[in-house]
Amino acid sequence: MSVELTAAGRLRSRNPATGEVVGEVKISSEQEILKAVETARRAFAVWGGLRLDERLQLVERFHSVLLRRADELAELITRETGKPLIESHGAEIFGVLETCRWLEAHARAILSPAGVELNSVFFRGKKAYKVFEPLGVIAVISPWNFPFAIPVEAILNALAAGNTVVLKPSPKTPAISLAIEKLFADAGFPAGVVSVVHGDKDQAAALVRSDVSRVVFTGSVPGGKAIMSLAAEKLHPLTLELGGKHAAIVLADADLDKVAPAIVWGAFTNAGQACASIERVYAERSVADRLGARVSELTGRLVVGDGLTPGVDVGPMIDTDQVERVQAQVADAVSGGARILAGGTTAPELGPCFYRPTVLVDVTEKMRVAAEETFGPVLPIIAVDSVDEAIELANGSHLGLGASIWTANIARAESLARRLQAGMVWVNDGLYSHSCPDAPWGGVKASGFGRKGSACGLLDFTFVKLISAARQGRRDWYYPYTRDRLSLVRSGMELCHGGLPAKLSALRRLLPAWLRSRRTP
Picture 1 (cartoon, rainbow, N blue to C red):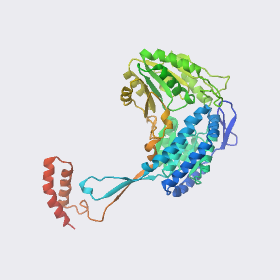
Picture 2: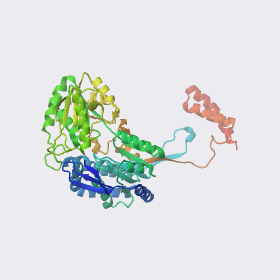
Picture 3: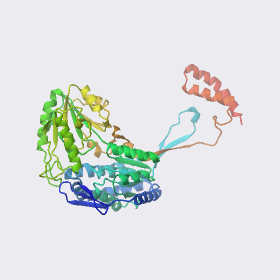
Picture 4: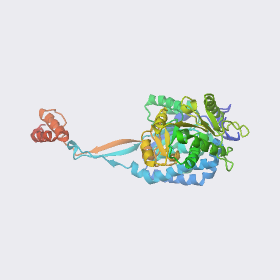
């Protein structure tokens, strides 16, 4: 296991590659969680009232502090999660740096008041505009697979919008969560603006039941259902990013020499422990065998080992529980007739958390590896007779986070993308937009709802307030409800929405009714 509960009620993490102790924290009591939320609520009273430029100055300072500490932080991420050092830099730190820059460039335009046009003749002369107000205290509950990028990108967006944050990270990555808290403090964010509490399901439940204003949860489908049930008690709004079963559809015209390396990376980056990992390939039958051969050849070349070792491509899984989950799916597939083209075994000589990247063929939709989220380094390749069949099978999953299409015909792919039930569809690529704050990220169906990133994600941390102003005066819809005012309203409806004859008739009735209504007290 990469984390253990000590006799003193503390969480202790271990490097899944070596077993060395990496970090240790005290589990937060319910009283400590409530205190953190109350402190964040008091801090919000000041933070939410700052000018956006003042908040963005601290985002810029955070960017500078993070860039200076990138090497030491990347090493910590690798030691606590096992992922190769290049992934700690590229998939964790880079996206956060990009988020800082994006907020500095775009937050002012997105969060500025916007005019509202009132086009009806009834409302002429009124001024109206919408403003985007911060919600209050945001609860961010984050996972272990991207323990830096996922929470910090959400925190930065929440802070820029004027909120304060209480983070409850995964119990498997306590050292990284402490580093996050220190980064915000060292960047100069006021006390209470970002707080971290520690624990597992009980602590997450206590946080969701507290006086927070929105919950942002990233995790499993069962976890999301539990959080949603708890949030319903307080009517807390939610952002849920849950599981995925990324289907990659490979068309017959695809250049397999270019597609195969991309699919291998999309399946096995972070040891397959990504919600948007490619977890199934539907290849047109004319290219399926060649694709399987090429993918298995490249997979066999991957170097598995300690993520801190130069040249390692795939690190360990987070713990033995995840290894056993993968083993069970592969065993189920093989027992049903699937064949292993590459991998399919643990690597005990490296340690208990290592599983070799695995390619399967002759997989059917009834097998667990095709139907359930794997969250590990396993790639089933399934031959289909047509693109229509591939889309039907891809959409057959209860999950709908990411999907991809691989073809030389981009125009056709863009048309096919509209038919896929997924929050993100990539053409001839995959996963990359998680590090691109310009792009919205999120799913449909059991993969959740709400969006991270882009203007969509930033505005999720606000509520829209309409402000409308007009000179004092009597309105035609005020009391008393006279016959003339009824005629005025009905004539106005016909004038606005009727055909030409109705409009002409309404005009003839409108003026006399209006003049008489003016004389009504």
